[in-house]
Length: 400
Image (cartoon, rainbow, N blue to C red; front, side, top):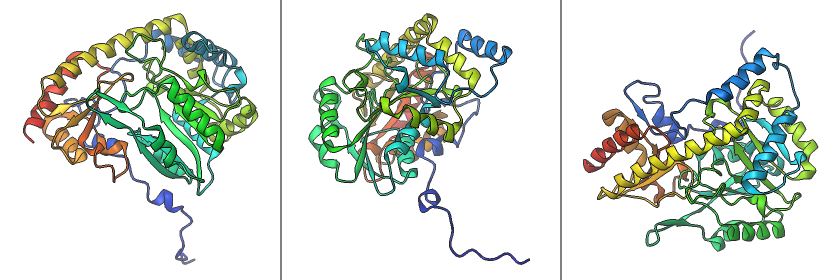
Protein backbone atom coordinates (compact mmCIF):
# COMPACT_ATOMS: atom_id res chain seq x y z
CA UNK A 1 0.00 0.00 0.00
CA UNK A 2 1.37 3.39 -0.97
CA UNK A 3 2.17 5.75 1.88
CA UNK A 4 -0.31 8.61 1.99
CA UNK A 5 1.49 11.98 2.10
CA UNK A 6 0.67 13.88 5.22
CA UNK A 7 0.05 17.50 4.36
CA UNK A 8 -0.90 18.61 7.88
CA UNK A 9 1.35 17.62 10.76
CA UNK A 10 -0.24 16.64 14.09
CA UNK A 11 2.85 17.86 15.94
CA UNK A 12 2.30 21.07 17.89
CA UNK A 13 4.21 24.08 16.51
CA UNK A 14 5.58 24.77 20.00
CA UNK A 15 7.28 21.36 19.94
CA UNK A 16 8.55 21.65 16.37
CA UNK A 17 10.20 24.97 17.19
CA UNK A 18 11.97 23.79 20.38
CA UNK A 19 15.74 24.19 20.26
CA UNK A 20 18.37 23.06 22.78
CA UNK A 21 19.29 25.86 25.16
CA UNK A 22 22.68 27.50 24.81
CA UNK A 23 24.17 25.72 27.84
CA UNK A 24 23.45 22.39 26.19
CA UNK A 25 24.74 23.55 22.81
CA UNK A 26 28.05 24.64 24.34
CA UNK A 27 28.46 21.49 26.43
CA UNK A 28 27.78 19.21 23.43
CA UNK A 29 31.07 20.41 21.95
CA UNK A 30 33.20 18.56 24.52
CA UNK A 31 31.02 16.87 27.14
CA UNK A 32 32.96 14.15 28.93
CA UNK A 33 36.30 14.85 27.27
CA UNK A 34 39.05 14.25 29.85
CA UNK A 35 41.03 17.45 29.21
CA UNK A 36 38.01 19.73 29.72
CA UNK A 37 37.47 21.84 32.83
CA UNK A 38 33.66 21.83 33.03
CA UNK A 39 32.31 24.83 34.94
CA UNK A 40 29.15 25.00 32.82
CA UNK A 41 26.66 22.89 34.82
CA UNK A 42 25.18 23.57 38.23
CA UNK A 43 26.75 20.81 40.28
CA UNK A 44 29.64 20.12 42.58
CA UNK A 45 32.42 17.70 41.64
CA UNK A 46 31.77 15.74 44.85
CA UNK A 47 30.00 12.43 44.49
CA UNK A 48 26.90 11.74 46.56
CA UNK A 49 28.01 10.89 50.12
CA UNK A 50 28.26 7.22 51.05
CA UNK A 51 25.59 7.28 53.75
CA UNK A 52 23.00 8.35 51.15
CA UNK A 53 24.14 5.76 48.61
CA UNK A 54 24.20 3.08 51.31
CA UNK A 55 20.59 3.84 52.25
CA UNK A 56 19.51 3.42 48.62
CA UNK A 57 21.52 0.19 48.29
CA UNK A 58 19.93 -1.17 51.46
CA UNK A 59 16.50 -0.31 50.09
CA UNK A 60 17.32 -2.30 46.96
CA UNK A 61 18.54 -5.23 49.04
CA UNK A 62 15.41 -5.03 51.17
CA UNK A 63 13.20 -5.28 48.09
CA UNK A 64 12.03 -1.68 47.76
CA UNK A 65 11.69 -2.03 43.99
CA UNK A 66 7.90 -1.87 43.66
CA UNK A 67 5.38 0.87 43.07
CA UNK A 68 4.76 3.15 46.00
CA UNK A 69 2.59 6.15 46.84
CA UNK A 70 2.63 8.58 43.90
CA UNK A 71 3.13 11.53 46.25
CA UNK A 72 6.13 9.98 48.00
CA UNK A 73 6.73 7.48 50.77
CA UNK A 74 5.51 8.59 54.20
CA UNK A 75 8.97 8.58 55.86
CA UNK A 76 10.32 10.93 53.19
CA UNK A 77 7.43 13.35 53.41
CA UNK A 78 7.80 13.36 57.20
CA UNK A 79 11.53 14.03 56.83
CA UNK A 80 10.83 16.92 54.44
CA UNK A 81 8.42 18.40 56.99
CA UNK A 82 11.18 18.14 59.60
CA UNK A 83 13.66 19.83 57.25
CA UNK A 84 11.34 22.80 56.81
CA UNK A 85 10.72 22.93 60.54
CA UNK A 86 14.42 23.24 61.43
CA UNK A 87 15.54 25.46 58.54
CA UNK A 88 12.49 27.74 58.22
CA UNK A 89 10.87 27.35 61.66
CA UNK A 90 7.69 26.67 59.70
CA UNK A 91 5.21 23.81 60.09
CA UNK A 92 4.07 22.34 56.76
CA UNK A 93 1.19 19.86 56.70
CA UNK A 94 1.94 16.51 55.03
CA UNK A 95 -0.93 16.95 52.55
CA UNK A 96 0.99 19.91 51.09
CA UNK A 97 4.13 17.88 50.24
CA UNK A 98 4.45 15.84 47.03
CA UNK A 99 7.57 14.03 45.77
CA UNK A 100 6.84 13.35 42.07
CA UNK A 101 10.41 12.74 40.91
CA UNK A 102 12.93 15.36 39.83
CA UNK A 103 12.46 18.97 40.91
CA UNK A 104 11.96 19.87 37.26
CA UNK A 105 8.91 17.60 37.30
CA UNK A 106 7.62 19.60 40.25
CA UNK A 107 7.85 22.71 38.06
CA UNK A 108 5.90 20.91 35.35
CA UNK A 109 3.17 19.86 37.80
CA UNK A 110 2.83 23.43 39.06
CA UNK A 111 2.54 24.72 35.50
CA UNK A 112 0.04 22.03 34.53
CA UNK A 113 -2.07 23.01 37.52
CA UNK A 114 -2.52 26.66 36.53
CA UNK A 115 -1.75 27.09 32.80
CA UNK A 116 -4.08 26.75 29.84
CA UNK A 117 -3.13 27.49 26.24
CA UNK A 118 -3.06 31.25 25.72
CA UNK A 119 -2.18 32.12 29.31
CA UNK A 120 1.15 33.71 30.14
CA UNK A 121 3.80 33.20 32.78
CA UNK A 122 5.98 36.08 33.96
CA UNK A 123 9.54 35.01 34.78
CA UNK A 124 11.97 37.08 36.80
CA UNK A 125 15.17 36.86 34.77
CA UNK A 126 17.99 36.08 34.21
CA UNK A 127 16.66 32.58 34.88
CA UNK A 128 17.57 28.95 34.20
CA UNK A 129 16.34 28.23 30.63
CA UNK A 130 14.57 24.95 31.46
CA UNK A 131 11.99 27.02 33.32
CA UNK A 132 10.75 29.16 30.47
CA UNK A 133 11.03 26.27 28.02
CA UNK A 134 8.78 24.18 30.29
CA UNK A 135 6.26 27.04 30.41
CA UNK A 136 6.26 27.29 26.62
CA UNK A 137 5.72 23.53 26.32
CA UNK A 138 2.57 23.79 28.46
CA UNK A 139 1.20 26.31 25.95
CA UNK A 140 2.00 29.50 27.81
CA UNK A 141 3.46 32.70 26.48
CA UNK A 142 6.48 33.68 28.55
CA UNK A 143 7.06 37.29 29.57
CA UNK A 144 10.21 38.44 31.32
CA UNK A 145 10.91 40.98 34.05
CA UNK A 146 14.65 41.46 34.28
CA UNK A 147 16.50 42.06 37.51
CA UNK A 148 18.44 45.31 37.38
CA UNK A 149 22.16 45.78 37.94
CA UNK A 150 23.00 48.20 40.73
CA UNK A 151 26.75 48.57 40.19
CA UNK A 152 26.99 51.27 42.86
CA UNK A 153 25.87 48.87 45.58
CA UNK A 154 27.14 45.83 43.65
CA UNK A 155 23.88 43.91 43.81
CA UNK A 156 20.96 42.77 41.69
CA UNK A 157 17.59 44.42 42.42
CA UNK A 158 13.97 43.68 41.54
CA UNK A 159 11.71 46.56 40.50
CA UNK A 160 8.37 45.43 41.90
CA UNK A 161 6.38 48.02 39.98
CA UNK A 162 7.95 46.81 36.76
CA UNK A 163 7.16 43.21 37.70
CA UNK A 164 3.53 44.04 38.39
CA UNK A 165 3.25 46.07 35.16
CA UNK A 166 4.53 43.06 33.18
CA UNK A 167 1.47 41.09 34.30
CA UNK A 168 -1.80 41.40 32.41
CA UNK A 169 -5.23 39.79 32.31
CA UNK A 170 -3.77 36.58 30.84
CA UNK A 171 -1.06 36.16 33.48
CA UNK A 172 -1.64 32.99 35.48
CA UNK A 173 1.71 32.61 37.24
CA UNK A 174 4.83 34.49 38.29
CA UNK A 175 8.01 32.42 38.44
CA UNK A 176 10.71 33.52 40.89
CA UNK A 177 13.97 31.77 41.77
CA UNK A 178 15.57 32.85 45.05
CA UNK A 179 18.44 32.31 45.56
CA UNK A 180 18.62 32.87 41.85
CA UNK A 181 20.31 30.90 39.11
CA UNK A 182 22.48 32.39 37.61
CA UNK A 183 22.65 35.63 39.63
CA UNK A 184 22.68 34.48 43.27
CA UNK A 185 20.11 37.21 44.01
CA UNK A 186 17.92 36.66 47.09
CA UNK A 187 14.41 38.06 47.47
CA UNK A 188 13.62 39.81 50.75
CA UNK A 189 10.63 38.90 52.96
CA UNK A 190 9.14 42.35 52.29
CA UNK A 191 9.32 41.75 48.54
CA UNK A 192 7.75 38.31 48.99
CA UNK A 193 4.86 39.76 50.95
CA UNK A 194 4.29 42.46 48.32
CA UNK A 195 4.24 39.90 45.49
CA UNK A 196 1.94 37.62 47.48
CA UNK A 197 -0.52 40.46 48.11
CA UNK A 198 -0.48 41.41 44.42
CA UNK A 199 -1.05 37.82 43.29
CA UNK A 200 -3.83 37.19 45.79
CA UNK A 201 -5.72 40.22 44.50
CA UNK A 202 -5.45 39.14 40.85
CA UNK A 203 -5.74 35.37 41.02
CA UNK A 204 -2.12 34.76 39.96
CA UNK A 205 -0.13 31.76 41.18
CA UNK A 206 3.42 32.03 42.50
CA UNK A 207 5.93 29.35 41.49
CA UNK A 208 8.96 29.77 43.72
CA UNK A 209 12.19 27.90 42.95
CA UNK A 210 13.99 27.53 46.30
CA UNK A 211 16.37 24.67 45.47
CA UNK A 212 19.39 26.73 46.63
CA UNK A 213 17.64 27.82 49.81
CA UNK A 214 20.29 26.55 52.23
CA UNK A 215 23.24 27.70 50.10
CA UNK A 216 23.44 31.25 51.43
CA UNK A 217 26.41 33.31 52.58
CA UNK A 218 25.05 35.52 55.38
CA UNK A 219 25.03 32.81 58.04
CA UNK A 220 21.28 32.15 57.84
CA UNK A 221 20.07 28.53 57.82
CA UNK A 222 17.87 29.27 54.81
CA UNK A 223 17.05 32.12 52.44
CA UNK A 224 13.65 33.81 52.98
CA UNK A 225 10.93 31.48 51.72
CA UNK A 226 7.39 31.99 50.49
CA UNK A 227 6.50 29.16 52.88
CA UNK A 228 7.12 31.62 55.71
CA UNK A 229 4.65 34.24 54.45
CA UNK A 230 1.96 32.29 52.55
CA UNK A 231 -1.15 30.71 54.03
CA UNK A 232 -1.70 26.97 53.46
CA UNK A 233 -4.30 27.54 50.73
CA UNK A 234 -2.57 30.38 48.91
CA UNK A 235 -1.81 29.61 45.26
CA UNK A 236 1.89 29.21 46.03
CA UNK A 237 4.00 26.35 44.69
CA UNK A 238 7.49 25.99 46.17
CA UNK A 239 10.06 23.85 44.36
CA UNK A 240 12.87 22.08 46.21
CA UNK A 241 15.50 19.55 45.21
CA UNK A 242 18.02 17.11 46.63
CA UNK A 243 20.32 17.81 43.67
CA UNK A 244 22.28 20.82 44.91
CA UNK A 245 22.68 20.80 48.74
CA UNK A 246 23.25 17.03 48.92
CA UNK A 247 25.24 16.47 45.66
CA UNK A 248 22.47 14.31 44.20
CA UNK A 249 22.07 15.76 40.69
CA UNK A 250 21.90 12.33 39.03
CA UNK A 251 19.24 11.00 41.40
CA UNK A 252 16.48 13.15 39.89
CA UNK A 253 14.50 13.65 43.06
CA UNK A 254 12.92 16.77 44.49
CA UNK A 255 9.67 17.88 46.04
CA UNK A 256 6.80 20.31 45.63
CA UNK A 257 5.01 22.16 48.41
CA UNK A 258 1.57 23.18 47.15
CA UNK A 259 -1.80 24.44 48.43
CA UNK A 260 -3.33 22.05 50.93
CA UNK A 261 -6.57 21.61 48.98
CA UNK A 262 -4.70 20.17 45.96
CA UNK A 263 -3.40 17.01 47.62
CA UNK A 264 -5.72 14.68 45.68
CA UNK A 265 -5.04 16.48 42.42
CA UNK A 266 -1.28 16.24 42.96
CA UNK A 267 -1.64 12.50 43.50
CA UNK A 268 -3.30 12.20 40.08
CA UNK A 269 -0.80 14.53 38.36
CA UNK A 270 2.18 12.72 39.83
CA UNK A 271 0.73 9.37 38.79
CA UNK A 272 0.00 10.57 35.26
CA UNK A 273 3.42 12.14 34.72
CA UNK A 274 5.80 9.72 36.43
CA UNK A 275 3.91 7.18 38.57
CA UNK A 276 5.84 8.66 41.49
CA UNK A 277 9.52 8.99 42.28
CA UNK A 278 11.92 6.03 42.12
CA UNK A 279 11.27 4.00 45.25
CA UNK A 280 14.80 3.16 46.41
CA UNK A 281 16.01 6.68 45.58
CA UNK A 282 13.45 7.99 48.06
CA UNK A 283 15.16 6.03 50.84
CA UNK A 284 18.42 7.71 49.87
CA UNK A 285 16.62 11.02 50.16
CA UNK A 286 15.40 10.11 53.65
CA UNK A 287 19.05 9.59 54.64
CA UNK A 288 19.96 12.97 53.11
CA UNK A 289 17.55 14.66 55.52
CA UNK A 290 19.20 13.03 58.56
CA UNK A 291 21.71 14.77 60.88
CA UNK A 292 24.48 13.35 58.66
CA UNK A 293 22.85 15.11 55.74
CA UNK A 294 22.76 18.39 57.64
CA UNK A 295 26.50 18.03 58.30
CA UNK A 296 27.15 17.35 54.62
CA UNK A 297 25.15 20.43 53.62
CA UNK A 298 27.30 22.55 55.90
CA UNK A 299 30.51 21.09 54.44
CA UNK A 300 29.29 21.74 50.91
CA UNK A 301 28.47 25.32 51.85
CA UNK A 302 32.05 25.75 53.08
CA UNK A 303 33.31 24.35 49.77
CA UNK A 304 31.15 26.93 48.01
CA UNK A 305 32.53 29.70 50.24
CA UNK A 306 36.04 28.72 49.18
CA UNK A 307 35.03 28.75 45.50
CA UNK A 308 33.33 32.09 46.07
CA UNK A 309 36.57 33.55 47.47
CA UNK A 310 38.63 32.14 44.59
CA UNK A 311 36.20 33.75 42.14
CA UNK A 312 36.15 37.06 44.04
CA UNK A 313 39.94 37.31 44.00
CA UNK A 314 39.97 36.52 40.29
CA UNK A 315 37.38 39.18 39.50
CA UNK A 316 39.24 41.74 41.63
CA UNK A 317 42.37 41.09 39.55
CA UNK A 318 40.65 41.70 36.21
CA UNK A 319 40.18 44.88 34.20
CA UNK A 320 37.33 43.67 31.97
CA UNK A 321 35.46 41.26 34.25
CA UNK A 322 33.12 42.34 37.07
CA UNK A 323 30.23 40.87 39.02
CA UNK A 324 27.59 41.45 41.63
CA UNK A 325 28.75 39.03 44.35
CA UNK A 326 26.09 36.32 44.78
CA UNK A 327 24.10 36.27 48.01
CA UNK A 328 23.29 32.58 47.54
CA UNK A 329 23.55 29.57 45.18
CA UNK A 330 27.02 28.68 43.84
CA UNK A 331 27.52 30.61 40.63
CA UNK A 332 29.65 33.47 39.47
CA UNK A 333 27.66 35.45 36.91
CA UNK A 334 30.48 37.39 35.33
CA UNK A 335 30.07 40.49 33.18
CA UNK A 336 32.71 40.73 30.46
CA UNK A 337 33.14 44.32 29.28
CA UNK A 338 33.09 44.53 25.49
CA UNK A 339 31.66 41.04 24.92
CA UNK A 340 28.45 41.04 22.89
CA UNK A 341 28.11 37.38 21.89
CA UNK A 342 28.38 35.12 24.93
CA UNK A 343 27.46 31.97 23.03
CA UNK A 344 30.27 32.18 20.50
CA UNK A 345 32.67 33.32 23.21
CA UNK A 346 31.78 30.21 25.25
CA UNK A 347 32.17 27.96 22.20
CA UNK A 348 35.60 29.41 21.45
CA UNK A 349 36.55 28.97 25.11
CA UNK A 350 35.78 25.25 24.79
CA UNK A 351 37.72 24.87 21.57
CA UNK A 352 40.77 26.97 22.43
CA UNK A 353 41.06 27.05 26.23
CA UNK A 354 39.37 23.75 27.13
CA UNK A 355 37.19 25.27 29.81
CA UNK A 356 33.41 25.16 29.79
CA UNK A 357 31.16 28.04 30.89
CA UNK A 358 27.46 28.77 30.46
CA UNK A 359 26.75 31.71 28.13
CA UNK A 360 24.56 34.52 29.43
CA UNK A 361 22.37 34.20 26.33
CA UNK A 362 20.93 30.98 27.81
CA UNK A 363 19.28 32.79 30.71
CA UNK A 364 17.20 35.41 28.91
CA UNK A 365 15.17 35.98 25.73
CA UNK A 366 17.04 36.88 22.50
CA UNK A 367 16.15 40.57 22.77
CA UNK A 368 17.88 40.86 26.17
CA UNK A 369 21.23 42.00 24.84
CA UNK A 370 22.41 43.11 28.29
CA UNK A 371 22.51 39.53 29.57
CA UNK A 372 24.52 38.48 26.50
CA UNK A 373 27.50 40.25 28.08
CA UNK A 374 27.62 37.67 30.89
CA UNK A 375 28.89 34.16 31.40
CA UNK A 376 28.13 31.84 34.32
CA UNK A 377 30.63 29.61 36.09
CA UNK A 378 29.90 27.12 38.89
CA UNK A 379 32.36 27.48 41.77
CA UNK A 380 31.07 24.55 43.90
CA UNK A 381 34.10 22.53 42.90
CA UNK A 382 37.67 21.82 43.88
CA UNK A 383 39.26 25.25 44.35
CA UNK A 384 42.30 24.36 42.21
CA UNK A 385 40.01 23.38 39.34
CA UNK A 386 38.06 26.63 39.70
CA UNK A 387 41.29 28.64 39.85
CA UNK A 388 42.71 26.96 36.74
CA UNK A 389 39.49 27.43 34.81
CA UNK A 390 39.29 31.09 35.74
CA UNK A 391 42.91 31.65 34.71
CA UNK A 392 42.11 30.23 31.28
CA UNK A 393 39.02 32.42 31.12
CA UNK A 394 41.06 35.52 32.02
CA UNK A 395 43.55 34.82 29.24
CA UNK A 396 40.74 34.44 26.72
CA UNK A 397 39.11 37.69 27.81
CA UNK A 398 42.45 39.50 27.52
CA UNK A 399 42.70 38.26 23.94
CA UNK A 400 39.25 39.51 22.93
